[in-house]
Length: 88
Image 1 (cartoon, rainbow, N blue to C red):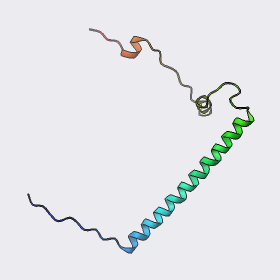
Image 2 (tube, helix red, strand yellow; image 1 turned 120 degrees about the vertical axis):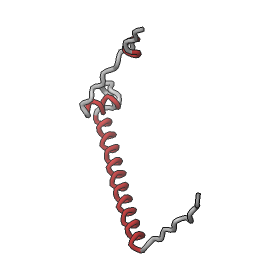
Image 3 (cartoon, rainbow, N blue to C red; image 1 turned 45 degrees about the vertical axis):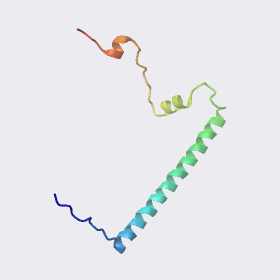
Image 4 (cartoon, rainbow, N blue to C red; image 1 turned 180 degrees about the vertical axis):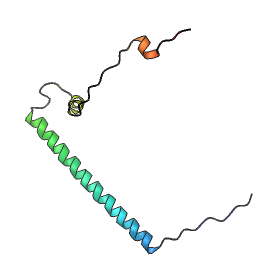
């Protein structure tokens, strides 16, 4: 089997400019998402402060599930539900 020489890639000025442009866009998006996260945390802490913490005893997970209209149904821990119907 013949071994060929490694391929040499040369960057052009357009390539580096495009890379810098994409890099700046990603940084801008990251800053915006960080700002949104900070605002979201501040709003959540205001909600918690206004409601007196977890006044009605709901956990953070339950509050999020309620807001998303998700109602988890726990699975029963019985043998048939864990292993199915095993028939020999």
